[in-house]
Image (cartoon, rainbow over all chains, first blue to last red; front, side, top):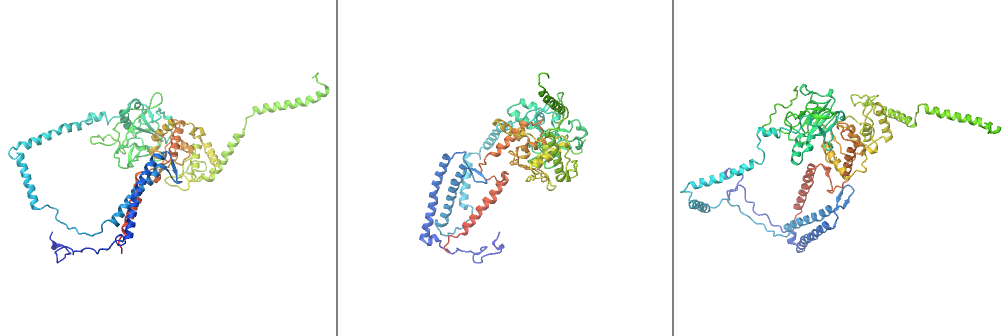
Length: 354
Length: 265
C-alpha cells in the first residue's frame, strides 16, 4: 500500500499522521515530595511484611482449628477452617497484589522513553548466510548424489507407524454388523425375565400399580452380573413402567398386546444422547429428558413431541407370568439409546403408525 | 327366706326388684347396637368437613366433589390427598395456573382433618398415615444410605439429588423438599399431587418411605461448608456471580486505581 492513499499524512516526513512527540513530563507526588515517597515506601514494605504473618496464621489454622467446627453467621453456616483460610490466604494474595501495584505506580523509575519500530524481517545478509548454511548441510548429508537415502528413510519411518495404528484400532471390538448385534443392539431382556423395582429389587404385580404410577425397573437377570458387565447391561436395560387409563391413551393395533391393563414399559435411555430419563408428568403423560429437554409422549407409543431427539422411545412388550408377576415378552424390538451411523432406524415407531 | 327376720324381709323385696332391674338394663344394653362416642364424633367431623367443603372447595370441585372443568373429582382421592393439598397451603388455590404453589396454611389441622374425613367418606382412598408409617425414628445409618439409593432411583430425576427441586416444561416444576414435613413427603408419594407420579405402598412400602424421608432429613441437616449456596443451581449461578460480581468488581477496582492519579498535578 502506498502512503499516498492514506487520508492523513504529515507532508514534512511523508508519514500518515503527524508525529505527536512526547507528552510533557509531570513529576509524581512521591518524587516531588520526599516525605510522600517515604510513606509509600513504608506502605509497600508494610504490606509485604504482613504476608508472612498471614501465611503462618494459615498454617496454624490448618492444624489448630478442628475440621468439624462450624461458624453460624445466621443466614449461612460455614466451616471455621474455610473462613480462616479465606481470610488469611485471600488477604495475603490481595496484599501482594496491592504492594506490586503501588510499587510500580509510585516508586519505580518514572522516565518516558521512545521505542522505534523496525521491520520484523532479518537483514538480507543474515538471510543469505542461513540459506548458504542449509545448502551446505544438504550437500554434506549426501542425499544430493545418493537419492534413495531420503526415500528409504521416509518409508521406514512411515511403516513403523503401522504397529501403532493396529494397536490403537484394536483397543475395542471392531464394530462389525455381527458385533453390533451382540452388543449395542441387544439387552438382557428376554422372554419371561421378571421386571424388578430398581434398588428394592422386588417383583411387581399389575395390581401394585395405580393409575398415574411410575416405577423405575431393571431386569431380574441383572442381579447375577457384577462389575463392568453389570454396569454395561444396566445402562442398556433400565426401564420405566407407567400405568395410565387405557381409555385415555393411544394404543396402536400392532402394540395392543404389549401392555397389561394400561401398564406400559419404556426404555429409560433417551434416544438423543442416552441420558436416563424418568421425569414423567402423570397428567400430560409426557416424559422429559433433563439433559436437552427432549419430550416423549408415553400415551402415544413414546413419540417425540419436543426437543432434539430424533426417534421414539423404544417400548418393551410385557405380560404377566403364571405367578402373576410382570415379565418381559422378549427383548426390545429396536436398539435402545442414542443413534449411530450404521443403525437401522426403519423399525422405529413413527407418529401415526398402526 | 325363712332365715331372714320379718323386718329384714321387708327390705329384701325392694332390693331384689332393684337388682332385677339392673340385670335387665345391663342385658338390654348388651343386645342393642351401640353408637360409641367415637363414632358420633366421626360423623360430626364429616358434617363439619362437609360444611367447610361447601364454602371453600365446592366452587371448583363441585357441590358433591364430582369435579368440574376447573378441577378434578375428589371422590376416591382419600384423606391423605386432602391433608397434603391443604396442609401445604396448595389448596384452596388462589387462581388457575401452570402449577399450584405451596402457600402459608390458613386452616387449622382440625379443619383440614374434617375436610379430609368428608372427602374420605365419599370413596375409599389413601388415609392420613399414622406417625409410625413415616417416622424416621430408629433408622440405622445403613437404612438411611439405602433410602438415599431409593431417592436417587425414584425421586432425584425431578427433585434433584438431595431434593433441591427442579424445572419441568411449561412453567411447571418439582418443588424443593427442604421445608416439606415428613408426613407430607409420605402423602405426596402415595397420592401423586399435580404432575407427580404415584409411588404406591406395594412398590415402595412404608419402610422404603421412612428410609427416603430419613435420607432427606439427614441430607438437609448437614451444614453447608461452602458458605453461600447461591441457589444451589450449580455452574450457571456460580458463573453468573464470578462474571458479574467477581470480574465486574475487579474492573471497577482497576478503573479506580487508574483514575487515582499519582501525578503531582
